[in-house]
Image (cartoon, rainbow, N blue to C red; front, side, top):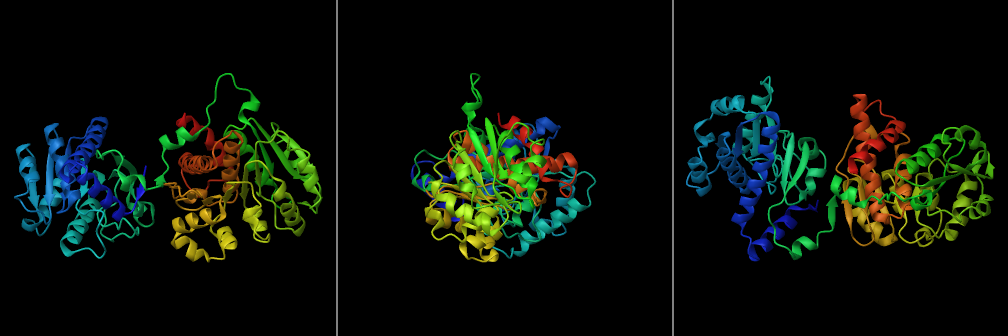
Length: 515
């Protein structure tokens, strides 16, 4: 799914109109696609009555087209108009299809709106479009606020479908008016608008589905957009094939350098995640004292026991690791290493010798900060997985600067450093040096727990070990990780109790859904 700004979407539609697919036809396609989604939900749930909030803009037009289609399919339809003139041809056609109309101008106390909402199984919110700026004008604010009040008094709520975006959301900044009605589903046209994947707007979006509006092929304004939103189809296509005639060598060897006596579990989580995502073999390179605690927890792994200082990898470990790399197809450095000076010496001296795909996470990133020109010493297109604090250490930017402009920051440093950046957090951003950028459409406190980043790093290195492209492995790993977090929270009934091991245990079910 493409991720666009409001101005990019306008440019796309303008070029489509110039190349023979008129604005009117785009609206027809959008409205029909919207109606088909609502109709399918109705057939599944036994719904056949819908109220549409219809404003003066294109979203209102999309809603009228959809209501007309639904009326023709046997639904009882109510269009509640605000600031839309009755001589609109779309309204004439809607009435001819048997739809009913109510107007805010003749319903100042919103009694009619309350009445039709109470009769409706579905509320279609097409009042305002993607181009609005806050604060809302009085009439729109009154209709939305009245809708919220009406819904708050209902025992059985209608299923709310937002047309392109929930009314009152700024589709660039992610700001949201206090009157905005939360949607159960947002049906967005052609591409996801970037503000929908920002807070607080995301809290109003519900599920997200994109409708094909019939854009012509080879639109310049469309092809220049390299920003996307990860979805199930995209990630499924990124996963390595698993042929029947495979053997463990087919799926590569992930070499995981991780752990210290202070962070024993980090190595375990990363190694298990690499296995769970499909790596054929995982070799665990850990400080020697960790072996007794870990070996029984992950019996499938092979082990390289490293020299240490007080339980932290020492600089003397470089030669030991180099002796064991003949079978490795990808490497992870970082989870649980700690920031001991001896480990920094190991990382600094080992980096130039790495010739295989590399993922660097956690304390591995913090050691990079102390190494001059570190980004030039990594294998080409390595994957870095910083959270905002680690990104701050790497860039010198404050956390606030990073969080206020996550996409731009990730893109900038991916390009400058020449490596794939996975900027973790709500709506994890993955940026490639070639300008590609993908956002994971998930924000959940289920992943705000120690160890979940180790699971993510393990997933990515497991995919890299199987031969996946660096950017695709990062996108797939982050998507699987996010969906596993959601699934773990659902199974436990709360986000508060989700542990990193719960996220790890949910990975197989996510993979099964992707097959």
